[in-house]
Image 1: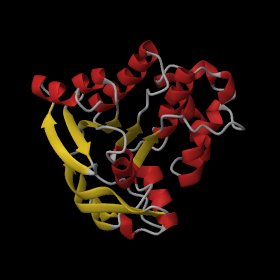
Image 2: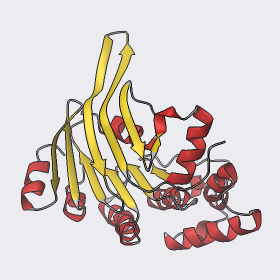
Image 3: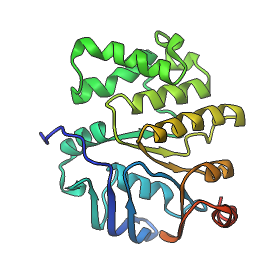
Image 4: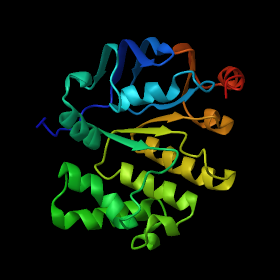
Length: 246
């Protein structure tokens, strides 16, 4: 078992390449990515479909491994971890939020939020329910605690998914199109939660097609054909460039 210490949210990708083999041959999803993300940054990753956005986020979160290159978070070379070590490391250090929520339908909302704590054994048993309820309150759905996910709206499910991502108090939040299935009003509520997490010192990395998000983050990274073609602080120029690829 790896040391269950939280890593500093410093992310360093060095010449990362990711290739997939299929019936049509070899496809290069990421082609020599070099990227540094500092602790507390608020970052949007944008690009057309197939540009490599999700693959890049999967590299950072340890969901997938590079074909070559290095991924260092804190002082840890994460691809050196075994699968079981990686699962525990990710559960402690990175909160992942998906477009389609991925809540377990047979568990209540409360049980879904407690699950990462149970898996990583990060909090004493007697504290887990209380912490889960506090997180549900933080995202505004504490009254749904005893319901099953199927009875919640899409926006409510996504807020539960964010609470679950925060369960082990990770320093990094990685979100892949977190508002892709939500209406604009609900999406705004979800983005306000992310804004608040950055104010608390979390590192938040969002994949998005939402132009309004580009206006609120501090840095915009644009991918095309598996390469970084722009990496700039957000200003009027950044917003204008990003519109071409959203």
